[in-house]
Length: 368
Image (cartoon, rainbow, N blue to C red; front, side, top):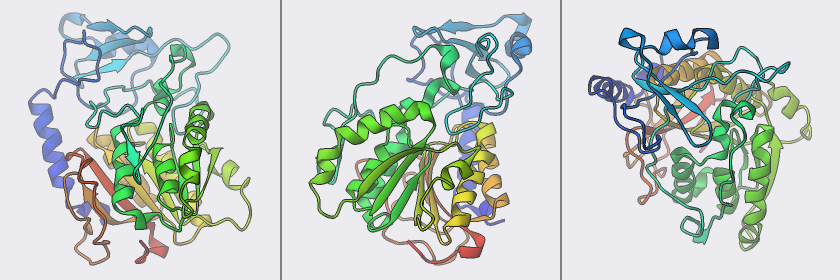
């Protein structure tokens, strides 16, 4: 009921319905030759054997686009979105798991109708945290499609990560002096920002394929971290949301995390419960920990599934900061929202992006 009482819920639903009525919008992130409008998709796609039937439009015709990296996109008339056609699995080898966790061969193909960028940033010196550039290496050529884990999305920088990093800069008390665990770190932008802004220790986690790029980013920005005496240490580690105990059992027994960060990681339906379960496993071992999640709406069904999963795993939604808003507010009219939390004025996202603060019901308090 707490999650259902979000002040922004009716607005988000209205926006989604309006987009659907209008046929959605053309994504500038989509290949230039795509002719159809795109919008967020959700749910498990059809099995490869039924793919053509599931994506066929009127008269059985399918619209297909092949990108330069070999990926094949098929327009799904039922959901009015382009979707990545699942490649056949390698011989005698099960398909690997998606970004964030999981290794089941039954995982669904990628609904890759991701939104266009609100914050075009090159990370070549143009993006700064605490007055100093945060650098990333130029993105290298991707892996073969049949080697990717749900599109290898962890190798890209999404708007939610940029917005969260700059929000931490605008509201550094969220991480200053605290021990931080980031889930789904990708290239490490949020975690590096947290360390630079005074987190005492930050652990950046993701699947194995992301860690090379994350470690490279940490090394590239190591000099910047050393410049400030208040800045904390950084660590990179693998954490699969489908097996969080493997990570937790490898940690020092006296370790304590104060806050969990996750930026733009909720986009695939079959990862929503795994993410919530991983956050709950961390929270169970670290009483009082908060989870700050920056979410970009791509599918109302995926968003609802994640909020329901967090509730099912014992979390309450303590406060929210919708995109465009200037002040964080409680979802249920209480007075627990920190008044100082705000988006960075130069990186204030639109209504598709929101910040949610979750706490386990048993430890719901005024921290932060």
